[in-house]
Image 1 (spheres, helix red, strand yellow):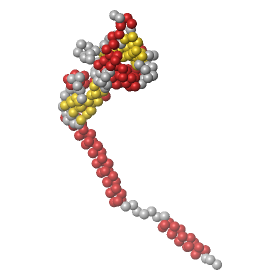
Image 2 (image 1 turned 30 degrees about the vertical axis):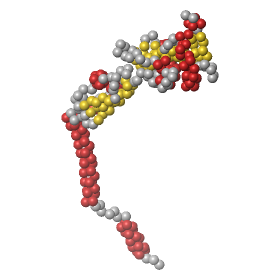
Image 3 (image 1 turned 135 degrees about the vertical axis):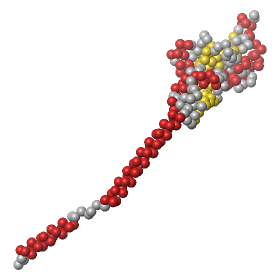
Image 4 (image 1 turned 180 degrees about the vertical axis):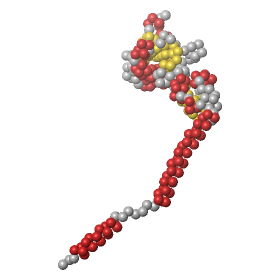
Amino acid sequence: MTDMHDLKRQKQKKVKQNRLRKKKQPRDWKKLFHRLLTTTVGLGSGALIVSGTVLTAQVLLESGYFAVSTVRVEHQSRVTEEDILAVSDIRPGDGIFDLDLHLIGRKIEENPWIATAEVERVFPDQIIIRVVEREPQAIVDLGYLYYVDNEGEIFKLLDGSDQLDFPVISGIDRDDMLNHPEQVRSRLRKALGLLELLRNREMFSLEQISQLHVDPYQGLTLYTLVGGVPIRIGHDDYLYKLQRLERVYNDLEPRLSALKYIDLNVIDRVIVKVDVKRSFS
């Protein structure tokens, strides 16, 4: 029979062994201190780098390192560099980071000759202004004369210094232009496309016309320089119609002063109407 004292001793032994297994290991304070020191130094170094960068940038800004010393204008032709610089209001000594480049570009584009203006910083102290100027393709008669560019954009009222040696487009209504600008621009693009075809031709070219009339219903009508004879060319197939006209134009040209109109809108035909009054005058 098992002795009670033996059971007590065995139980005490087991409890003692269990307690030994749960005993915590002593901390390595030297290793923990080393980790803490490394982390602190790293964070401190990062803070010093950031602080140093900010301080350096502030010193450079205050020293005038980024102050504008040169403003260069590129691609201008009709508008002088002096005029563009005056509108930009950029002055030597201005900080390049203090300039609103988008606003400067929009101010330059207020000049009717400037289609786009791109303003760029070139570090540390330069500004470049690149402009794209509009090229007039024709003159639009709106009661007053205006230039129109190749996009159909009416952009400038003519003054005494502007050239007049451009084809004239008539038939554009001012109110229609204000209320339906995209429709008017579409008509103008068609008119400009026809003028471009005429510009590249030899027999019947821009030199033979005085005016191009735009009508939303009848389409385009050319007027000859000699005699002011209307040539009805309609809404489309301009190249084909011009080719038909050129086949007979040598015969028609000497008699232009006696013609009432020429119609190219009938397929495979050139309709010529004689003005009886003019032919006998």
